[in-house]
Image 1 (cartoon, one colour):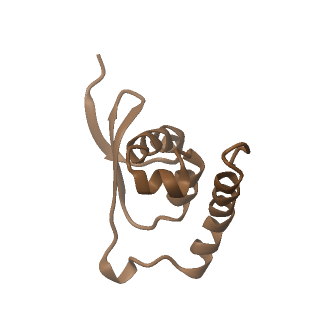
Image 2 (cartoon, rainbow, N blue to C red):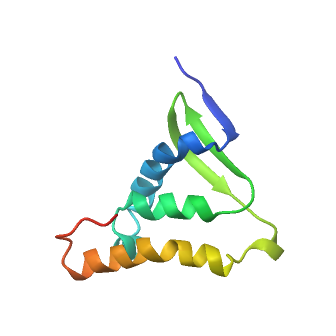
Image 3 (tube, rainbow, N blue to C red):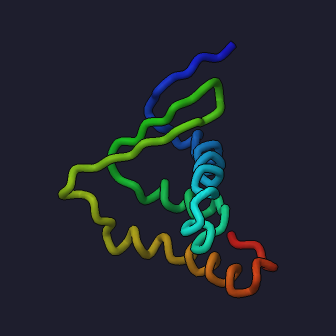
Length: 104
C-alpha cells in the first residue's frame, strides 16, 4: 500500500496535477464560468509559475499542490502572461460557442 508523501513537484507530475486542479477548481462557480473544468489552463499555469512547488502524493496520484514566491516575485512577467493567452482565448472561444468546441 502506497503512503502519503509531500515531495517537490517534478515535470512528470504535470498531467496528474492538472487533473487534480481541474477537479478541485471545478467546484468553484467563478472558475467554471471563466475556464470550465479545463486541464489545459492549469498545464499552462504550471509552466509559468516561479518559485517552489510541493505536491502531496499517494503512489502516483497527486492529491494536493502548493506554490509560493516571495512578495517581490509575485507578479508574472509580460512573457509569462503572453504564454497564457492562447489557453485563455481558446477557453473564451469555447465558452462563447456554447461549449461545442474543444478548448486546447
